[in-house]
Amino acid sequence: MNPPVRNRNRSQFNLRTRMLMVGAGLGLCAVALVGRAAYVQLVNSEFYQREGEARFLREVPIATSRGMITDRNGEPVAVSTPVASIWVNPQELLRAPERIPELAQALSLSADELTSKLTQKADKEFMYLRRRMNPDVAEQVVARKIPGVFSQREFRRYYPQGEAMAHVLGFTNIDDHGQEGLELAFDEWLRGKPGAKKVIRDRKGAIVESIDLVRAAEPGKDLTLSIDRRIQFLAMRELRNAVTQNKAAGGSIVVMDVATGEVLAMANLPTYNPNSVGGATPDTRRNRAVTDLVEPGSTMKPLTIATALQNQVVTPDTVIDTNPGYMSLGRYTIRDVPRNNGVLNVTGVITRSSNIGAAKIAAQIPDQVFYNSVRAFGYGAAPGSGFPGESSGLVPVPGSPGWYGTTKTTMSYGYGLSVTPLQIAQAYSALANGGQVITPTFVKGQRNEARQVLDANVAQEVVRMMETVVTNGGAKQAAILGYHVAGKTGTARKNGPRGYERGHYNLLFAGVVPATAPRFAAVIVVNDPRGALQYGGLVSAPVFHHVMEGTLRLMDVPPDDIQSWLAAQAAGKVGGKPGSSAVPLPIPQDAADTPNATAEFDAALPSASAQVPATTEVRQ
Image 1: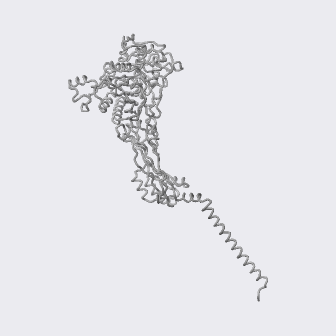
Image 2 (image 1 turned 45 degrees about the vertical axis):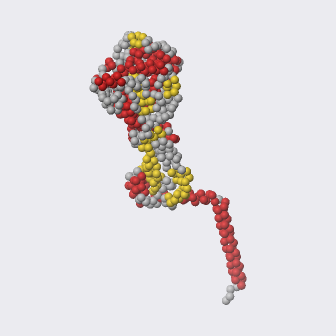
Image 3 (image 1 turned 90 degrees about the horizontal axis):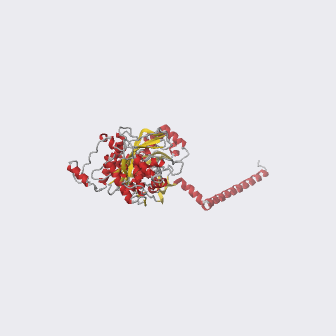
């Protein structure tokens, strides 16, 4: 039986309608696809191109080496060596967890700890696993083909001189940026600029192809220091011997070229290994010669005398009566120890290191004139060497709350003001350089402007006076055969929370050689010796002798005291030519055999704010 006609017409109608609807839908889809393609290709093409490239095209850095640091003779003292760092794409590695223990074993890590770190960085594509590795070891790790594990070339700083130059050079961090010392001071000069290149990575992150050089790497610039590594080593060795033999807490030494202001050596103890900074404490990393303040003790007396001569308050032959060997000043008493020096001329005040003589001379100098002279020598102001953290020191200002009625008196023989060893070296360089103060520098060939602060004749006269300290005073152990030596010892009692501490001293010696035509100045400070000897002339002066004797020969400075050398040769004590490296070093007199009477002595007059007994003595 045939179906009704009405149903057949409805079916025909539905089929046609459906065909039309499907065709219209397909047409709309085609239009949408064409529109979308046009939008992607024409309107927003840059966005999608960037997104696509971001998945495969990467810009990676090109490591660059830090500039080399050399000493004044071109010997490397800081170099950058290539190393490798292992990094991982956590997302890739976490998809192969069975390889994590293998990677942990290769890097000497805990598998559980590594898994924890990877989990924490699961949404990242980069994480360092180990930095500054031996490149060969890193290559072996990468050769295991663990998913997502790669190596990256970097550079690590290496210091061939180790502890000897640690405080001068400082060190760099793991990113090779200077952190202390000259590495920090010249970081921008040494650092260089990393390059960059575009590369294609596969889906696992491995570099497939280098596409384009974005920026060429620029190596850091080299730096030539004024330091002579030979003198530096000699200075560190002799300072260490003095600190060890005298059971001291530490020490500092500075050697300068008086004509140029170049620092030839600077060493401190305690020290640290810059190749392994992790075990060093902030205390051992401090450059005490630049940052730590000490009271200069009797090394201040030549500056006091120079000020008096410059202002015509005294002449070299002026008579100073130091009787009876002590002088009351308010509730304090100044003493000449160990004995009354009687009547002295100005040279004798330096030779005998008379506190009374220095105080009486200073009393004739107006306060402001004395203050201005002390500041002119560089005390109370940062030396300006450019070394990070250099201290300015402390010099009381006349009329200020820190200036008392006794301040000028105590300053005249080295108390009541604070300076750094570098400042003392700068001041003594001025005495040796015809009265010109030159800003210290650690860069070879850098010429800083000189300031004339003292008449050249006055400076020469003071240097001649200081020669008597070595020939007839308390610094005989600073003498160098064949050379005239001028210097001054100092023994300054340390100031603690409750004032000056009995039995605790800083032992100093500052001197210049050769005295007739000075080339070098050196300052030695030995901090708080606990041995039997506690005199600057017995502890610090021998360090000067050994270091400067070697320096004179290394720098080929001819002797200026041939007569003394000929006399020693005639006595069979030396052979060869004076000043020749073939001449054996004279055997230094044992400090323990030197009677205390030949040492220099000081009496301390504390500042009015210090809580100390009314009579205080400091030996030197």
